[in-house]
Amino acid sequence: MWLFGRKGASGFSYSSTAEEVTQGIDGSGLTAIVTGASSGIGTETARVLALRGAHVIMGVRNMAAGKEVKEAIVKEIPAAKIDAMELDLSSMASVRKFAAVFSSSHLPLNLLIAGHFLLTSLLLDTMKKTSRKTKKEGRIVNVSSEAHRFPYREGIRFDKINDQAGYSSLAAYGQSKLANVLHANELARRLKVSVILMNWNEIDDLVMDEEMVNGLFF
Image (cartoon, rainbow, N blue to C red; front, top):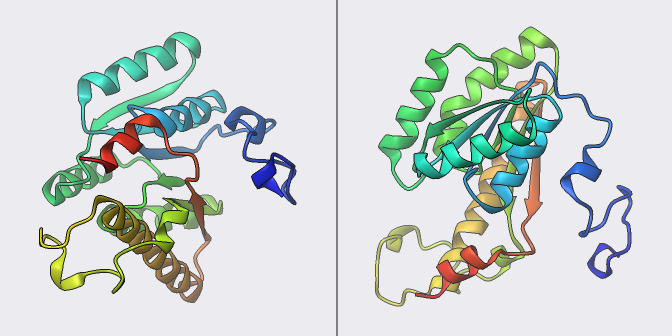
């Protein structure tokens, strides 16, 4: 029913805002990493988490843009605890560097909003340690899309990931979102087996902003 603007079982619909969904939640003492935080959904996620008292680490590819977002959030929320760190998810070296720098900070990690297989893997031990120490359930959030139903005909092209032959931007996007879903399902299975206070969520990104749509057509 949410598709038509009606509230679902959660009490919210697709038109509900992040502030409405988190009303009454106290994030004080929690540390969250939000990737893609310099624009769109990532920016709003970082802003509302900071509003609710969480210490937000923004993973951004463009540090200048990240700094602008941070300054805007602090201007609106003077007490916000928010930092920007360089992170290019298309570079494995950048992902490893980000994880190493964060780990060396010895900060706890309660919430990871990323959807990147390597980043999740590198930070998983930190999340497990945090949940054991605080007795608070950690949470990993992957942002997927209904587009995961429309990858290449053969599914994920494991042997042709970088092959330009037969390339389709739409199918490639669907492939990436299918990979998100498969990764998250396997992660959920393993975490249940490990009996760690962790939870996994997958969000369908049904409404794409202009920047994302433009990126699909080139």
